Image (cartoon, rainbow, N blue to C red; front, side, top):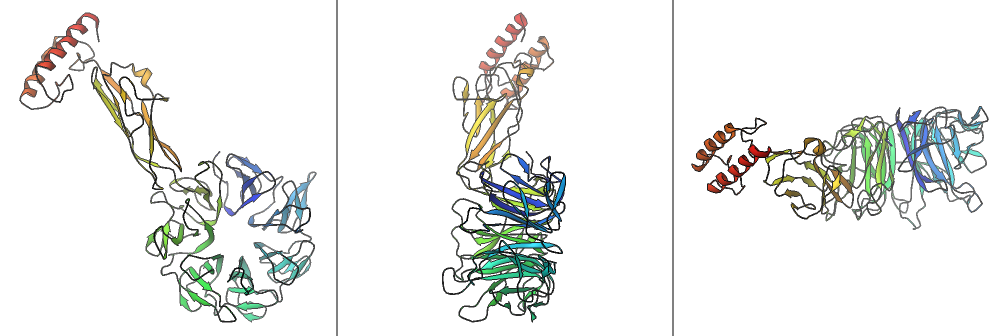
Length: 544
């Protein structure tokens, strides 16, 4: 089943609705993988499924939340965007103004919803005793019929504003706890395109501590698209990574990507660059572990084609490489099999099971592209612990009866593992035995081959190569075995073949070629004359 959506994909989320973890995909599509699905669907690793009637306009974000805490309800998937209906009651679309809940079986609106677009959702406990709640942000000015400037809180029953809210559109929300279980409280960060938060100057980014808005220094000089809390392993603890269209953050030149480290015990926070920058906007940030045993990486998606000194097609990582001590930028895959050919909107981690139980999860990307990793992938694609790659496949082999034939394959493991090989003939697995050697190596040798019926050898010989991350196959190569007595390749045996052989034999005695090395000894002598004459007389009597 292909990973292909009819229109852009904006949001990805792994969620267990009671039947196991699936990947939920939201956007503006109406079909995905050939399945009709209105703006949202789920992928179980084998097939796509619609979520009832879906929603009537784009999905921009999703979040998982248990809205009754220790109550009987299971965690549900909350979905936000530009839609006004979600699901149906009979044949009638059910109103759901820009936000709705999917409980695994049905769509449920969240009160009156909002009066305009919702672009971001996040679950946050403000520490005031009410427990975790769902926060929604976007372009709206009302939530549940009450004033709420661009951001509001849903406690499972009712909507409430966050102080004076924000003066412009919010595109992302993220929670950061600077000292994990320490005394510093967690805060909710909002990024977008605004000038004030709660009436205080806050350029495009601010944090909410449960009772007040706080500016992050001088903020950024242009819009913030995405936020992600991450500890890069360099010893500085968890910080907020910020991506967007800006050139400066906190007054520091840091195009499109920057890092904000909050201060502890009342100290101000600090902005810093990552020592290199993308050459165009960053649209998504997420944490992923791409290979077994590797450190978690910050995955970066957007519209860039280079980041720092690294060529990277709209997708890259920031992490400490094995054996290293400092994080660095890396592409995802190697050109021309890296990234995507156009904008990446979101990234998510999901183990679809397709690479085996030991391979680990894959990185899925959503956006507005037609290829991912060098392969066709309409708006949704997958990267993961990469299977091996065949560099050079076997070549067609032409020889004469009685000689040996050899097929070889060159492959590499993209995850640094050892490779296992297996050869096949016409789709049937080979094993070492009489006339066959190297069936589980990179080179297959066939001894004493005989005239082959071309129809029976339509598919020829091919090899599979595999490691712990998957398998790849070479293209098949045919074996053509010619009659040794038909030396001039006319299709029939006659005196002309004897004349041609004698001419070649005398030349080869002088070291010219090995064309007359009929016995495949590596040299030409009387033994070749004897073998050829045996073939020639036999073919005159009974044909090749």
